[in-house]
Image (cartoon, rainbow, N blue to C red; front, side, top):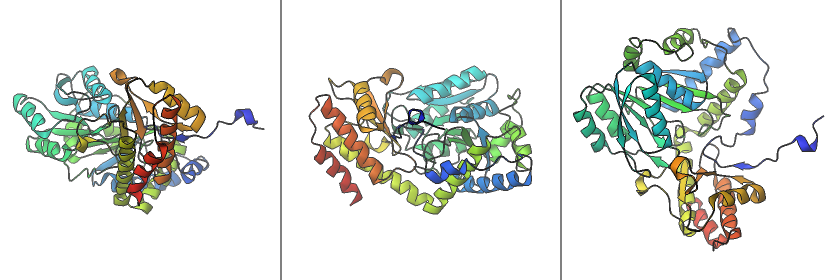
Length: 387
């Protein structure tokens, strides 16, 4: 028997992933185990595959990897990049730094376009680098830098630059796909990667990858691919509606249900909901007399709200109070931003209720540490967006 001490208090999870998971998605994981080489799994795989293409807005091949989103990005790197090959990588946060490091460890040569954190790469900047580096084989880009709350709004133009120069275009969309616009085919994206635990509101543990015909041409020539992340092997098994290795069956059930919920809501409506909730958060932040970390308004993320910590405020204490007193979880800064910013996940099932609960908890926690706040003004600022 489970005792009261064994139960974990349920809190509102507003970190930038994992996110709150709908009950129907959680219950889906209770389905019985099946043979992952049998007809039941083939049907499950087919349904997931079709719904993934809807979310990615693609006719390209899609794959489900039992791994984190980081594993999905590593898979892309290992299949697309060979020894000594040059790749253009804008670096403007922790995850774009990691992307460059993955390429380096693979034996590739990352051409890093270093930018101030809080800014996003411009298409014109990338075009200049492409002209200076004619030997570069690809552009690898983080669409939504989770560590800084910055979205690259020039992504469509950068995809066009890659296409016009016959370069591969890989996009890390781990913290944004399903929460903002990302038509993979229209934007000339050859490989796109996301994770299950963010805007799709599914538990963590799956990476989702789309692969274009142009990418397959390169993958077929790439040598020394790791066995587990070999996309050619995945394609072979996908033709049978299977995975090369044992899949995390409960997570496949969960993903299937989560994608059904996306379909039911409609992708455009889902994206608009994320946008409205983000606007409400930014309105409330302004009322709190705090400032977003992204330097340009147009690059503020709709899925990760990053906010500068006011002078004299201890961000870890604020998060502790929010967690222990108000039962709301948000994140702090990463890397060189540790202690300097707060990050709020605006992902998945987020709605007016989650926004107002988070704003209320943040405002009260700030008040508790001595920062002057008018809670009602902050809540009203957020409510305006939903009226």
